[in-house]
Amino acid sequence: MTDIIWGNGQKIISTDSFQINVTHRKDGNSDEYPDSVKIIISGVDLPGLSDNKSDWTVENLQSVIVNAFLKCEIDSKTPEGHLIAKVSHSGAAGY
Image 1 (spheres, helix red, strand yellow):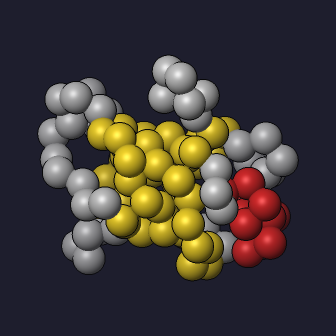
Image 2 (cartoon, rainbow, N blue to C red; image 1 turned 135 degrees about the horizontal axis):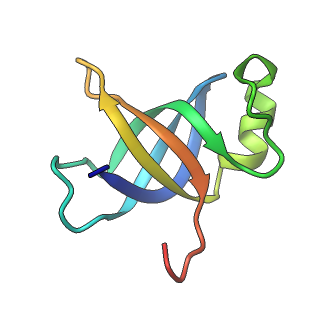
């Protein structure tokens, strides 16, 4: 079962990572997640952003992530506590 968190995209850190303000956590997640965490993007389903990571820029990410309500399906966690996750826009009503 994949752990899932939801929240608002905050600042872009690099061309494949950003800070998220976590507002919701899936019941039954196998781990605890802080209210603010760095997400390293493993994959995306974001309208307006290419599936090809090499095309991403900080500006591209800012336009689709900052202030957006996002769903992050967590693949793994780095030793530093950063999350590697697939990121998509979330329909607010059903998360």
